[in-house]
Image (cartoon, helix red, strand yellow):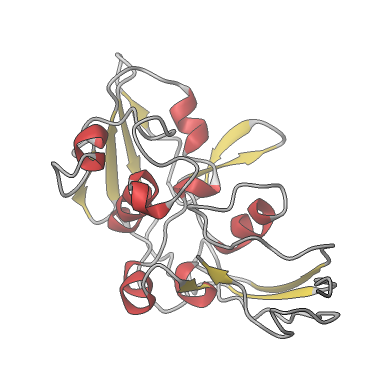
Length: 223
């Protein structure tokens, strides 16, 4: 079996027409092996995360090392005194590549997708990073259709309720696991999402392959 070599991955990032994502950029990245996946619910290694971070938007992100800063949110959110409740306002105008809005419902859907054991996410289930959310256990057990601890009182407000206080919850929200994904894209293509549907930025990859059973020129998929 011939060894597949991903010698170049050209990412054409078509940023959404908004004040938050108002530029168009192109970046070329070289990797020594194939990407495992571009699904932010699954990919969790040092090779996938940088690409997922370039394609998907999270509520918070990092700057200058470990400093948390807003990304899709207007600020770092409001926390209750008991450390169990967090409220975030989401910036208006951020869109997915197909024009769908990146709203509170998109983040709720994405995090519930991670929690769902069917996603095969490393953070799925009750023991995952989001298992501390109120209602996560009932959702995992099939006793609830959604996670009651994630509420969207309006299209651009999202509220989280934790079972126990956990300051690292904010750090979890800054990882690709908490990236918003396109609900319409998921419905159209199912769990095998093509990257243009999944992220805020369209990706048109060019894969140069030395020859393998997978064949050259295949587009990475969200598995």
